[in-house]
Length: 321
Ligand code: ACO
Image 1 (tube, helix red, strand yellow):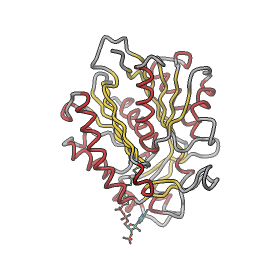
Image 2 (cartoon, rainbow, N blue to C red; image 1 turned 135 degrees about the vertical axis):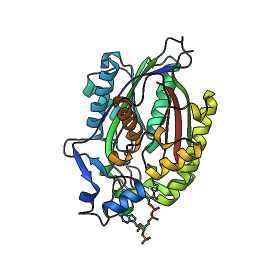
Image 3 (cartoon, rainbow, N blue to C red; image 1 turned 90 degrees about the horizontal axis):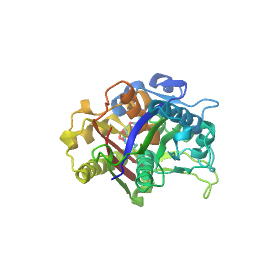
Image 4 (cartoon, rainbow, N blue to C red; image 1 turned 120 degrees about the vertical axis):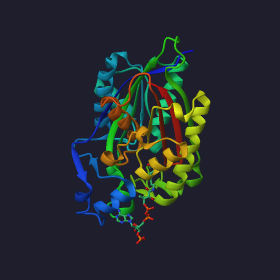
């Protein structure tokens, strides 16, 4: 059976680092409040010349380098974002061009913070069906461009960045390597709890992020615990066998509550929300790449990726690295 094998990862952050203290100069908030409620101490914001596409291209180039491949080896790009450079064409096509590729399919998926899980699941399905052999799977965002700086309940929570995986078809000889199972969900019933109040077909504007944080928190812990259990069962593994959890980095308290529900200690959870804040679709590959490059995540380990975001959408993927 052909599986999608993890071949390498990369990430990129904007040049400008913004501490809580700096944010508190212009927003009615404090370093203490942000740290206590979220675990965030800083984030990165894209500056002039930095866009979702430029960050995605940098992350993708590093992932290719990490995999020992070039764009000539790639035959699919799937990019998850809620903050594309333009309404169209897809940001994935801009990355394809910037990397010097052409001809093969490149498209975006929109599932907000779960976007990377959706992109990975889609790429994996295309590889297993023979439609592609090596894919660049990217999560990239510039949420700073969607934030309402007058709304302190949301603008302190998010940051910009990008992360990328290269995955490729296995030769079919090892059934316990690569992406072992993926589970994706969506439920539009709670759209009003987390959304952007603009768009080309309604207001003709980009809009601002709106969130009822407390309600989102409650749904996130329930949905994530459930999908993690489901994906483990689907692959025939147990939580105790997992080496690393790489969660969507929304809030340290959500990571803590979800790990507790699974009975996993926090030292098995990769945490980058303190440094990156919530980078939406970029957060899972950014966190993964951090732990991959600093040597925590190693070849052969069992890693579970999970995310929940606007829609609601949520999902998890179990991977033998
Ligand atoms: N600085 C200072 N005070 C603030 C701030 C701020 N930035 N924001 C809110 N407050 C105040 C509120 O006004 C309120 O004051 P009041 O009691 O006088 O009315 C008080 O702090 C408490 O506000 P709550 O919203 O109840 O605070 P809560 O403890 O729920 O924390 C938070 C808010 C951090 C947003 C939390 O609900 C949360 O993390 N929710 C999950 C949101 C999330 O992670 N979403 C992302 C998941 S999906 C995705 O990633 C897109």
